[in-house]
Amino acid sequence: MAVLKTIVEVVFIIVCIFLTVVILLQEGKSAGLGAISGAADTYWGKNKGRSMEGMLVKLTRLGVILFLVLAAVLNIGSF
Image (tube, rainbow, N blue to C red; front, side):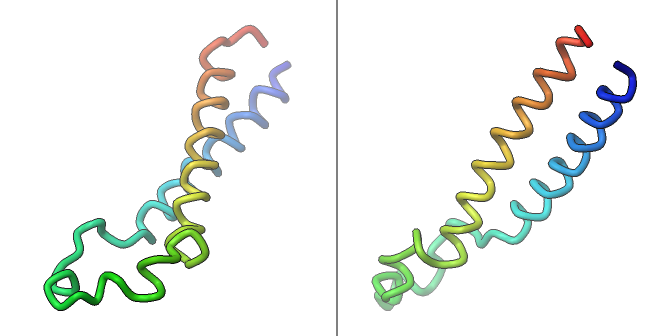
């Protein structure tokens, strides 16, 4: 059981690093000066789900889910 716990801890650390990197890669949510000139309504602004920003949001959600599941498994300590 010690080997399984060590493997889960290593995966947990990798998920933490992955989540940190993905969050730091995301852009800020403030519109900035682009909202004044109407640049926020461009093709990329309307299709964020298909852009790099949309992919980063999806990866963040996946990372958070993995983080919570692994944290709960490690916290139970039953193995």
